[in-house]
Length: 341
Ligand code: PMV
Image (cartoon, rainbow, N blue to C red; front, side):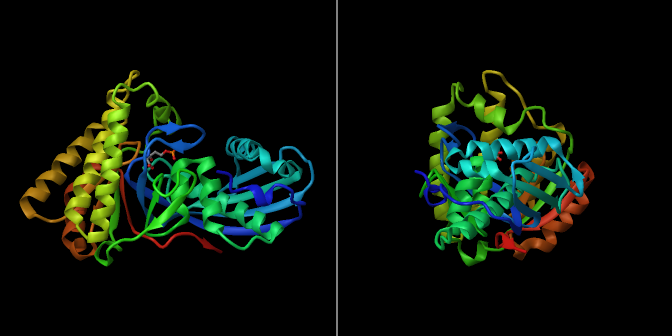
């Protein structure tokens, strides 16, 4: 499927736009690819609210080199600029973009290395700005967010889910773009407190981790499990069944990290404090029956998921018992998706 057909023969003009796009946390994980940037299984995520990237794009016409300049917090970043330039060149059907110079001014509301995906927020913010440019030049009026999701996916799979608010799936309706999914009103305001147990740089990148699934002995069992977990989570989100959502959430986090531990070239991103916190969360749930669940991204930091209705007691537990294990705690919640700003 190619959603870029209407944008193939455009004439470049100057344009400026600015987008704020949030990060997301996967409840059902994308871990393993097929083809070019297509997921081996469906995934499902909650879009965050406070953790976002704000990006201003200034397009001008000219063949100057480099074609992309990127400033993060006002400082020039040549490595990120080169990645965006390579991404733009990979959009071969939009070859006219070679005549366009892009200046990117960007910042995140959350620190790097905290287990909050800046690739999801940053690359979706960029893709939204690029989509805005394509729609402006072409006069196309429909499927703006679908196109932005398609362009985000080509940069980073998880970014495809950040262009919508609430809960979002990718790899069910389509492998090529993500879609918004319904949620019971009681689960529409879930909280996510991120327990940052280590801000160290990851030893194995997500790209390398996806690659290790291609020869993983448990790959097909994992993809089948993820499909089952996806359908269980969707049904539980619709029914408002938080204990079912939580059970699958934790199983998904542990399966993701089990894949790393059992990969042909094994590795782990977990830290002793991650496991200590998991033990404490399980004990807290047994003792209080309160609905506190965890998930993990490809890193050691825990996302603590709980409902607004139990927020007071759970935040007391987090700040008294879990926070001493951590470098910091970042409070976030389910958000409404990107905005043009
Ligand atoms: O989008 P990528 O290539 O950075 O991969 C993301 C992988 C996970 O964050 C571990 C899972 C997910 O679905 O977001």
